Length: 149
Image (cartoon, rainbow, N blue to C red; front, side, top):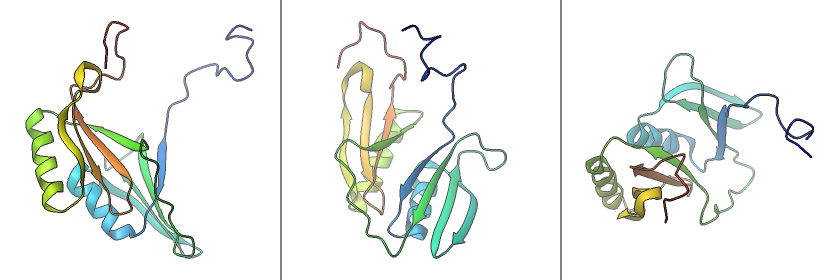
């Protein structure tokens, strides 16, 4: 079956618009993403006891948002060991700064660490709900076949 005849093949790329994550404490999670990733709160509401916040890099007309949901009547299950969101930063020094801040707040999970040419220089940090955020420098989204881990 070719891509053109595959019913699961999109006729055009489908852009990702959001990632939704559960939050144990919405206010603490919003503050975390503002402080660590420079995100802006662009939308907030409550629906039937569920608090929702949308965070984006652009305050106006965001193309991508992180949706955080605080659902008080359902427990948050601990995320898997490899589940994470990735954030690219501008320098190794920024990774070091983030790792130092996270270490001082007791939420550094890994790093800072040079994880090779594909992954780059990284630090892994837990948000207030236990979700892992990977901050990286030098990580390519389209690594070549000759790169190795």
